[in-house]
Length: 84
Image 1 (cartoon, one colour):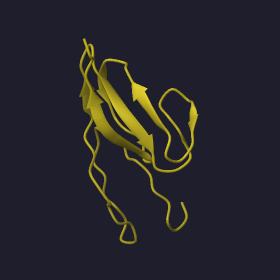
Image 2 (cartoon, rainbow, N blue to C red):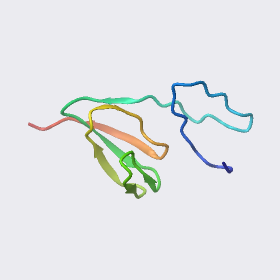
Image 3 (cartoon, rainbow, N blue to C red):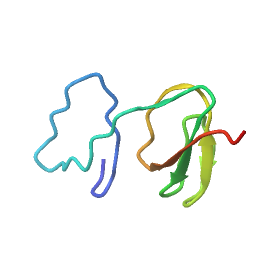
């Protein structure tokens, strides 16, 4: 890895950072309930969990139920509930 890189350590496991590494944030998985979705936004160009290339600022919905761990360059904007 080079200076300025960001990466995600997926557990379970123990991560002991090297002296030159700074832990920026600790992220927990978000549960997507049936009938809801997560609205995600890309911070910079990246591939999402389904392999689709996303541009910086692009938003999309993750509808697959279960635990979802956002990628390094993904931000959870909101949890979307259905309008009936």
